[in-house]
Length: 420
Image (cartoon, rainbow, N blue to C red; front, side, top):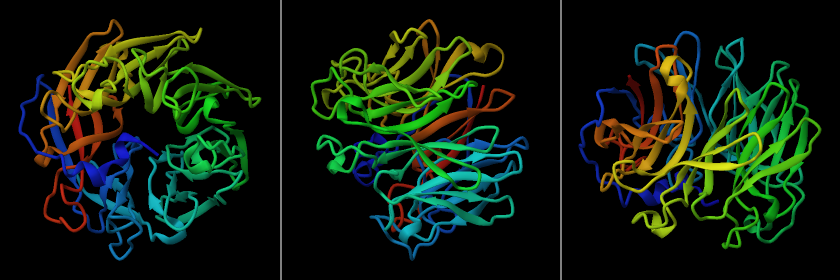
């Protein structure tokens, strides 16, 4: 499971908190620094959600109940709410065991209920609901076989209350090129009363392996990426794919990455515009002369049009543009609707704490902020979200509060806002 964002235990050896100034006039504000106690530690890699009142909701991978220890860290994670005054409330603290670790972002329904996934621990992962009252309910526990194993990413919910998601492993495939021969992953649907259905089981490594988050269009088509697998890439594990799964269960590979200028190892959620174009990031490939990321390339932002033609909108070079992009989001209001906004986990240059950037559709990239480490945090994760005033919100997995090294040696992570 070679995900860039899962390297927290290793990354602490590299973290040097620098104090670089913001490139533009945007105002960067740290909204909250996790302490590693009951509030949690190290926000998860999936996207937060925001309600109509401006409250933010998300999960942390660690912290919470620090008697729980199913990994190298103390605590099994939390579900949290951050209100508009900066007050954070843990809505649920994961207990470990079969309940596993907090891992996904959250989706919010019209009644204030939150839905997410938890993976790891002694089980094979589960889908849960946290009611507005704080009541926690397990909706489905995966068996680790043909039904899937390790749900890891953001869920999608339709108007009928069905949930859609992916599992990193499991399914029917026994291809030895899939991780540990434990299956190549699945796409699943969970009905409002907990009925589980496998919509697609990845067949083999060439079909795609280790699916990431999904998005859904108005006609019921699902779109996603696999971080490995596909054809046309030299490494036997594959460089990843972009796929479409229609409402009848037919899957189409829209693009198989080659690991060259087109990119490699897609990550994060895709973005779909009104014209049917998909946008996303690949954390490697692109400029293979980039001096970072082990010579595998510093990553790209890509577009796939309605005819499945891929265009690289920007290849990162490891300079002022940073490197290792992990997600983009389409701006929603005013002039922001003509651009994508995203994050990189490294750069620019010697700053390894990441950036926030704007990329217009002509390919012009503007560095909005160099994340400075220390109180600002380090290594942004998930996908930015935008409010009606064009403010952007995100999370970092490291940095922030440094007073609890037993739980998080290089900071427990932060939540931040950038005002235009």
